Length: 271
Image (cartoon, rainbow, N blue to C red):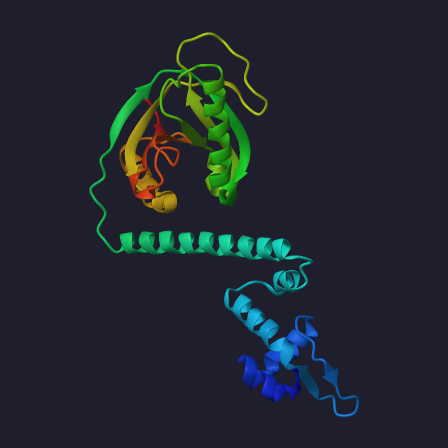
């Protein structure tokens, strides 16, 4: 048996304030079953308590009101559950980023280890590469897709990489948060093959680099860039050319970001 109750009583049943209940009515989430034509008093059914509890929990998970509406109006259970799963996955990703940011902030509170810099002159070498203009926010997904294409292509033609994969980042990528990025895998000697759509063959130019290693997550790459770039500014002459990153231990090799190992290679003038 159901009954109707005043908005105040419904507030007590649902732990939602009167102000919140009025807002949910205005945005179409939870309409009262009756509104007195003269007084404007709202009354709710006890059948609506479960719906109100669900709304309260979804808002507690920071789900936007349009998405809550989609959940409530889902035509079937599968559609509703898909919307809930999508929101939970976004929350898990946000939690991961928060954890990475916290770890990075803690690292700033500890003295940095002495910077180990070495120098290397690299001859020109051929690579299979993907080149595109990429935004800073999209770089993780772009790299994952690009390296998958490169390594899958080599595997399909029976070719082993000629060394660890890497990427170059243009000045514009840092200055404008959007710029050209080139992801590559070195090519060893072997029979020629046709590059797939979206990739191509590139000859990487000979260069001299100041190099250091970055160990761990990409979240605090800025510290390594800051230290190496400062060293170069103080001891060498930097070229206004892309910085190279070489992924010695990459996300494809381990699921533990603390195990990542990346060479950061700063292009400098040859003495």
